[in-house]
Image 1 (cartoon, helix red, strand yellow):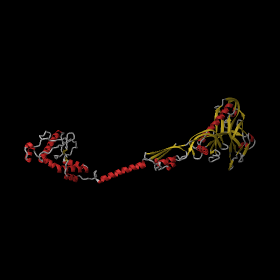
Image 2 (cartoon, rainbow, N blue to C red):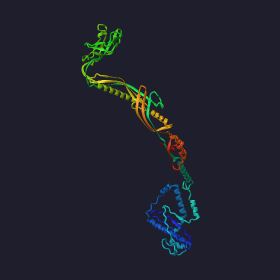
Image 3 (cartoon, rainbow, N blue to C red):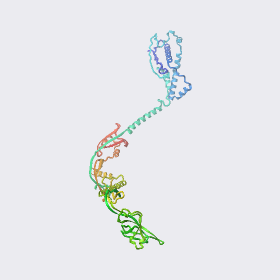
Image 4 (spheres, one colour):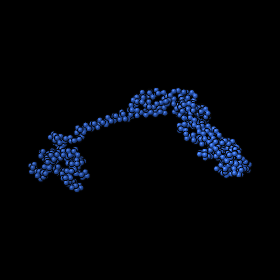
Length: 552
């Protein structure tokens, strides 16, 4: 077979208009000199085609100034500079001189150099040769900016040259440092993934359903202020009693009519200007006004002695209520000075006297408004209710918020009551009530604790309420003994106590099979489900925060 050479030519034209690389196969004819001439001819024809295609391209950019070109070169990375330097050395040192020398030979000079006639010259590429010539067009798309000529059958010398020119630089892909960094990154990623798979991702979720038992209580319990703690045996809880006493007087209209005879009343001040000795006055002692009207004191009193200083007497006095000796409006007199008729004819008559600061009133004879029996009964109830409500509001403000007050846990008692049947100028009478309210309160938490203890006593130790409903029916307070009896209706659902935190710590790092056996060994467990994630995890994580417990 004749020896062949393959020449690839890469253009540096823009992508849209660059020429297609042509692979030309030329069979060897006659002598090696003829083959070399043909190759040179072939290259020259290729250059010609390139030149024609380049003319059709857009106008080339103006030549860059050397300073700007140097600035762009300085901005290149070390790897880019090393690659450009290598390509420049390879192209100019090894290939370009010989190619330019061969292409510079003119076609008409070929016979003179080779000693062959002109008719034996190389035929132009693209025309049919006189001798059979095999040709093959190879199209290849390459990036612009670099022209490279690669000879496929390079000699060992060219390979050594390439080995000498291509060297690792800085942190290139071929550098040892880059390889070490890459290995470290890969190992770190693998290690981090393994750590996440073993420590971060695994988690466990355990859902437990406990057995439930119903327990009801429909009976009475008591709350007493005489005990300080819960008594399961006596079904009794502690209580606090809150009491308050007040009085009130309210006015009500009187619509009845009645013939009335009333005496005038008022207040006087009795003076002792006689001696330093006190003077007693019996009940009904008379006091006479200047116009002769008599008023009497209702109770016995003692008038204190006068003060005597340096022979000078300073009178002393005492106040007393008086009532007219007779009925009628004529005794409704204004302020006046009174004497004591009983001392008349003795030195005391001038030494003892009385004065009124305000008018006497109330004297009346005739028909006037008067409360009926019905009005008196209504006034009594309304006054008592108003007093009880007032006491209730006041006591409620004094009771701590954690105490329970139920209906029937209060007792109101009347200490004193009276009706003033005399109507005033507006036609109203008054009713007076003094009373005391006692309220019993207890802590509902104490009652629930008592009921829980009663349930645990029947169901067994360890049972705790899951759901409950408590209703109060009736209550009866005995304030004198300090005891409150109440009837309750309690409905509850109980289950055995379950400490989720203790259980969580007990299952850490257990195998899946051991975990299931352990769960069902706990008293009161009805059913349970265990979920480990991801799917390859076969143990409960050893981190308590990765374990979730749900109890139903």
